[in-house]
Length: 102
Image 1 (cartoon, rainbow, N blue to C red):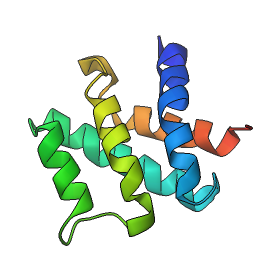
Image 2: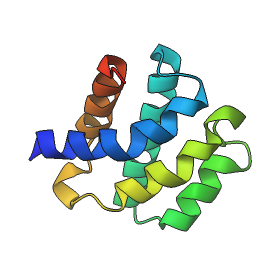
Image 3: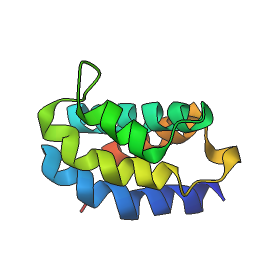
Image 4: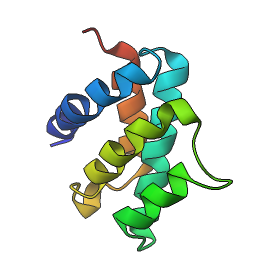
């Protein structure tokens, strides 16, 4: 299941993350952080809409260049089963992002 989950994350999220600034270390770290916040928010009972708003507006907003990735990453988190809502999922995403070869 974890490999399937990573494949799903890569298929859905990396094509959206790529234009944010290439798939370098900074981009992978930033998108991992978005994923991590979304996972924590969902576990805390926040809605996808409120998480998207939190990550794109106000003081807690992500950098402008990463805002186009927020909706896709948050939506992706809301497709995950409860067992996958862990920091390990975000860390595994970052590892796969860093190793991604188009």
